[in-house]
Image 1 (cartoon, helix red, strand yellow):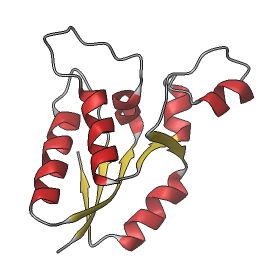
Image 2 (spheres, one colour; image 1 turned 90 degrees about the vertical axis):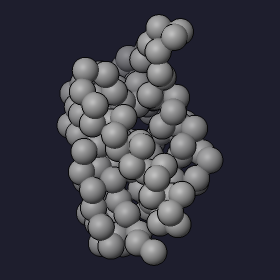
Image 3 (cartoon, rainbow, N blue to C red; image 1 turned 180 degrees about the horizontal axis):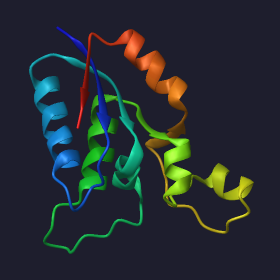
Length: 129
């Protein structure tokens, strides 16, 4: 079975990429593959904002990603630079940037491109959405 790193480059809403990435991740796990990390990059970081609030009858993609990460023990890593540019902040970045609010909570974490590189080194395959 393969070790897979998934890179998500599009936001939760407005494009199907993040949703397709989640479906792919679920199917890969069901088939016995290991998702070693999901790296949210570029506009993909918008998939992780805890302020995403779809209507009650719509699919909550951010929550679905969080549930997937917890259930399968998969690290969900945001590119910190991309996230800061798009207003996605963890509590630490909020403090460092003197902001009173943050919108990134566990199980999502911030990481640098080094996280992506080390993940690529460990992975058999890298799938980008």
